[in-house]
Length: 172
Image 1 (spheres, rainbow, N blue to C red):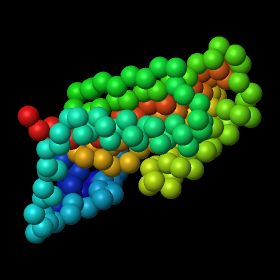
Image 2: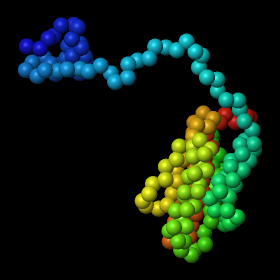
Image 3: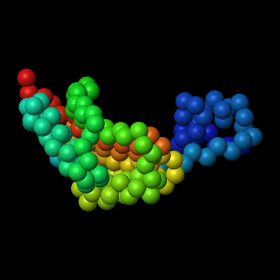
Image 4: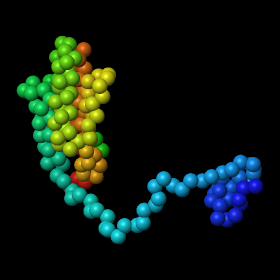
């Protein structure tokens, strides 16, 4: 007969207590939580970042995308540039499209160059070896994470580089 004393966690658990009563022939063992609760910290919570000027954040984002673009593709100019606010983040996208197929080895070289630069800048980088050549990266920025995406479509000769800043409180 299973132990149904108050010290038995299964006897007092809202889910397992009825299971134990209905199925006394089954042994129920509850393991302790994987991560024990941490005691409350005596340290004060980190302060929120100071509000930033939206124009300054847009300029920083544009400068970063420009530097990443040069690192990935050199002096080739983008055929399209777009910058917009998505909620409380700046999203900057540069695209280059020739319409002519791109050699897959060249596409992989572009991806590898950018992945190396992002890793040196402290980003967590993912560059999957299969599928479309691409790099996804992120690192803490402001109240959330900054994200970078480079996508190369060799068949269309299309390259898209997108940077999304972390969330920042914006000055009025």
